Image 1 (cartoon, rainbow, N blue to C red):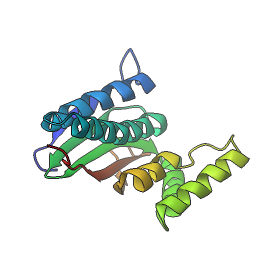
Image 2: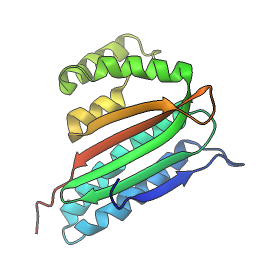
Image 3: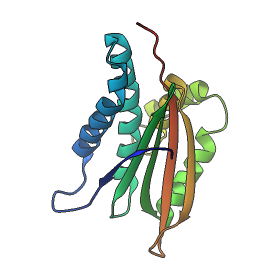
Image 4: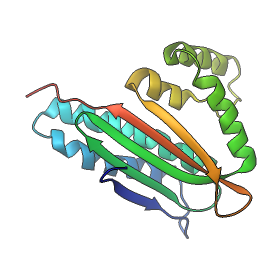
Length: 172
């Protein structure tokens, strides 16, 4: 990533939890939305979009990770916010995630989102539905990509999630 800001979330005595996701996402959103502060509407829109994207990706990393750190790298160029979230998962989790990605990345994200919402309503006990990722693609125009590679520990897989969303300045 070009000239990226990096944040590392470590396991420790406080553990990583959901509240860390929101706090970290808000911090990153505030940091990158500052360039839009000349317009209150642009600032709010940029902060919201960046915050939603970052929170969703960090929540997924926290929820499905193997013990260890989560590394977040983010950058912004003209009109585009980019982020990479890296974390380790066990082999079974990686396989399940790859299967999910195979189903939610083929077809129109808006149609797939509606199908998933209906499927979840019919069977609310099903987890890992991909609704968050589909919402990012459908409602925020996010472009997503993943790399799965062997991690330092032999029984783990490193998952790198790449995402970008358009952020434009529309008001003066």
